Amino acid sequence: MTQPERRTPRPDAPESSPLLSPEERRQVARAAALRPLNVLVLVIGAGIFATTLTWWVPPLTLVTYALLVFLAARDPIFGRRVLHGREEATRLADSVDPDVSPERRARWLPRGETRQRVEAALVVYRKVAAAVEESDDVTRAVLDDAVPKLHAAADRLVDVAQGREKAAEALRDLHQRTGTPAGSDSREEIVQDLQDKLRTADAEISDTFEKLLTLRSQVVRASLNSGNPDQATAFNASLDELNARLEALSEVMSPPEASS
Image 1 (cartoon, rainbow, N blue to C red):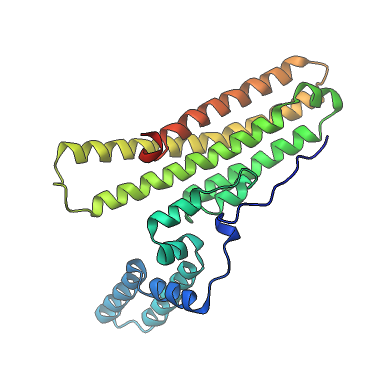
Image 2: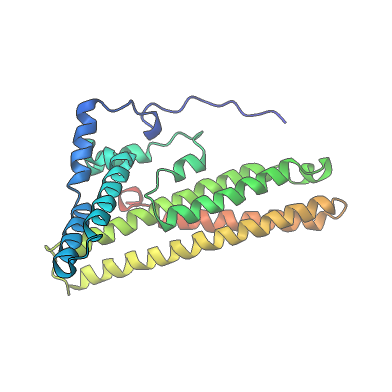
């Protein structure tokens, strides 16, 4: 099987960005030090110490604060927001070359539970692809188009996760915005819609992990019973269903400007 030719990633992809200059690094570090969440850790620590006078609270607070600043300063998404603004950072994150692997795209997601679940699913996805490619000749012939379908499913999973994180960010911004009355029908409707999208995306990401585990067992079973075409048919049907669900959800999770 010939390997597809790989193209050089586009220069505007996030990981192809040039190294930051000393001034840019200082700017990002300054923003990380003044990030509200990080400063809040200092405030809480000072409050606890003033109340309890426990000796270990100040050093623990300072260590936690330093760690948060360090992580923020090393976060490429945070750095792009500081240097280029939120809209430009989003544009750069969305400028993904088709040859960039889903694992690499997943590393651009904000750190948290969603990214962890997506990365865990992608580990299983690679195992499924390897199981197909390492199966016997008969099974590989029957599953000829399975690997491209698997790659498409992995990319769509990351698309769903990206849409989920954008919806979560929009929901946070909406809660912080004071221009719209909290009890207005339009605001409540938007909040409910975003919350529904978050729940749907979370459920689908978890379900995708389980479906990929099932796919792995199906392809192994198909390889062990290569004389029975029903096993390969069941694998293909499951893979097609997974792709259809992820494709539909990735369209639903698209940002408003992409769907208008």
